[in-house]
Image 1 (cartoon, rainbow, N blue to C red):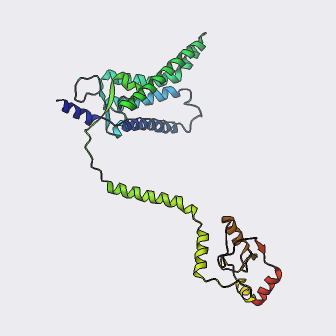
Image 2 (tube, helix red, strand yellow; image 1 turned 90 degrees about the horizontal axis):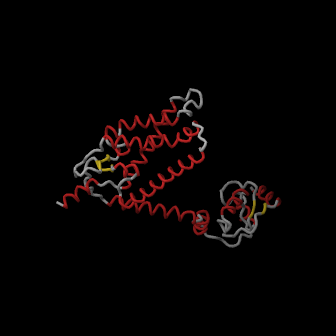
Image 3 (cartoon, rainbow, N blue to C red; image 1 turned 135 degrees about the horizontal axis):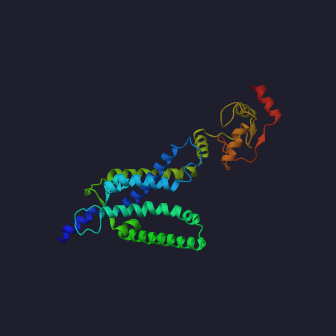
Amino acid sequence: MTSKKENVKSTNRVLRISQLDALELNKALEQLVWSQFTQCFHGFKPGLLARFEPEVKACLWLFLWRFTIYSKNATVGQSVLNIQYKNDFSPNLRYQPPSKNQKIWYAVCTIGGRWLEERCYDLLRNHHLASFGKVKQCVNFVIGLLKLGGLINFLIFLQRGKFATLTERLLGIHSVFCMPQNIREVGFEYMNRELLWHGFAEFLIFLLPLINVQKLKAKLSSWCIPLTGAPNSDNILATSGKECSLCGEWPTLPHTIGCEHIFCYFCAKSSFLFDMYFTCPKCGTEVHSLQPLKSGIEMSEVNAL
């Protein structure tokens, strides 16, 4: 008999994350309904709803409450997650929906409480009470106590997984699954493949910025093209002056970096800014200084062409 009771409880037990997701879905739905409702008054005078905003919100929430909790025993977020409220005061192990009084008190505590919190200061101020400051302090003290109670209830909920809100605990209603949840068989092959691929991709993303691709390319090109001796002859200077050693085009604003090869100014400057250890891709000479090509050598190159 005890094992049967434990099985019933385990099948109806709702995960904490599911209950929290249902609360977040409810908040998102309220914001969506309110934004859609205010769009209907877009062409009217600005601030038309500001004076009666708490009352309008309370009417909208009552409309949602009527067709969700009152008729279906579940909020919209709970319905999406296959969850509904159960009367915790019922001694029956079978599902018992919340009573009519519990549903009405749920609306009073949630909708009425939010409306009273937004309107209480205006109501007290309109009566021109002499002790308005003391009454305001008392109201703030009561609101603080309710917030503290909600915090304590949330900590207990995290430990036991029951009664996600203080209202649910006071009214004796908790979340259960509408239908028993079947045990699912999970295949880990796809998950392992995805984890492996994401780990490899993150490793590449971390490693690629540390690799100097341009320097590696220059080093590979210097290995593929055998280096000759020191280019001292005018013939080598004439052939190297016809094209930039980086882009292979006619050198624009020809400059040298300390060797006999010619570079475009923008090619050499951008490469040096990108890599402070930039070397010539043809001879491997490090950049000592970026100097413009002498006019005499440049004119001899033009005549040689």
